[in-house]
Image (cartoon, rainbow, N blue to C red):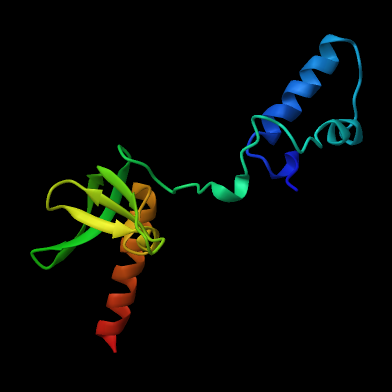
Length: 134
């Protein structure tokens, strides 16, 4: 049986209980609050195990390294669409003919910040420089 600790709303409920108690002049400690948050029949219960937090959403800007005329450069793209496929893969599309990527590519070939992309480009240049010296 599910309990409040398994609900996506547990933090909000905890704050609500603390606010009500304070408004009535009642002091509650952590144990008291946890005893209040044990409902297994809450009409607002949403099981947190059924929710997925996506690393980015439609409208976000992502950064990727593209080889243009033999030189690696950082490009940006706006995420237009997010899709969850039957396989469980989460896919992202950016603009017509720009890029498409899966969540597995984030941090490898697609980055959520320009700073992450710049760091990856520096590492790539360092690695390729070391290989060309060999």
